[in-house]
Image 1 (cartoon, rainbow, N blue to C red):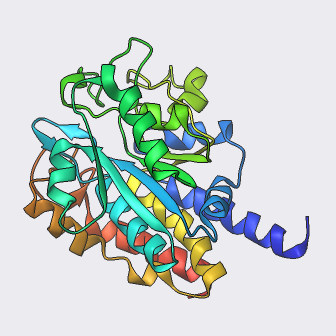
Image 2: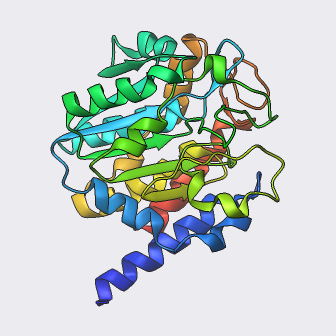
Length: 282
């Protein structure tokens, strides 16, 4: 490994530690089960893509969706678009309808995973993505259902993005923060200690974070370095929170329509962005 590669690996490991330092839902404990450098490897997948990237997001909370997931998805969308890729948001009916006026979207069914495989195959054939990323999407459990952090069955309100990961002919990335999201199948043997019903859907590269939105910042750190453009400085989590709040989002922990991420004030995510920017020299 050359000097530059060693430097990037070191940066990735430092960022990965930042992302789980609060250990809000046990992700720090899972970190030892992943090969260090996953933020770097995920970013390498996204590097220089000029084709389509499918971004799945949307975790249902009661009759709407939570703030964690969409914030990171929209931030990544804008960054990839700036770099010349064609990002497309893949989400359930309610979210796709809400976002379709401002973003490219692909609508998938809610509460009907029986047609999820067909929808995924059709979308993959249509879009021919070069990469797929899931950001805080519920993942199927071994019992064939979706569950939230309270172990409640949310299958009737969940969109099935799992088959996009399973059927993909391109690299797949997932970001999660609790163990019940797509991608956590990579570490399912080690999730028994957590008080959840774990997801079993796997991916090529898993990023874990105290808040899933924040995992995107680990990817943008390297895309900023390679493009010589401070993409992290252009993120606007508070602006996006206001945007999705007006569309009816709620905090996934408090279930309130407020400008927070998993009960944390938006200032926490902004402070993390600043720390990562400092680390990479901005």
